[in-house]
Amino acid sequence: MLLSELRHRVWDANMALPTENLVTMTSGNVSGRDPETNLMVIKPSGVKFPDLTPESMVVLDMNGKVVEGEFGPSSDTATHLWVYRNRDDVHGMVHTHSNYATAFAAANRPIPCVLTAIADEFGCDIPVGGYAAIGGKAIGEELLRSIGRSPAILMKNHGVFTIGPTVEKALKAAVMVEDVAKTVWLALQMGTPDRLTDEEIEANYVRYHTRYGTADASVIDF
Image: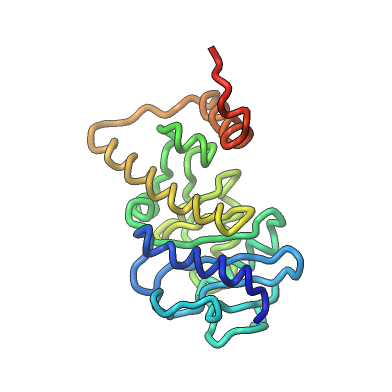
């Protein structure tokens, strides 16, 4: 079996989607790109999550040719491939229709950076990309045009896409975007929450991406 380790990681991330309440039935998908072979592993199309196995993940080359797999690849395959072909730093990608984040996408509204958690993980307002048709490269083109430095984007009238240097980081961004979307939606029921200043957003983003989880994280500034 080709890319056994990556297949297991992509399968594990796919299985996390229903566990984290980010998808229903057969919707959503996770992929990963192997940096050595430049092959992509992605969830098969139309297979229910309980029936997925590492072996059922589909392996394709960057031209979309199936290299190994019993099933057809996800209907979002062209989007994943376009991103991988145009972003060398991306090796993991997730697509969901998680409720709160997708509600912002349906309303064509970015998620404003009103929480330090948003500044930490995303470093900006979580953007909305314009509407693009499913099945071709259009979503991928709009995604890359609009995502900026954020690891997540809301695609108008569609759902959520997240990217990362690994499958696991893309999955984390997908979990986080739904979590903050819910909190922001709740805050909006009480009024208009204050957006952090650009300076505070940048300070939190830099701290989180350079110090969090390191030995320096325990240093307290007085």
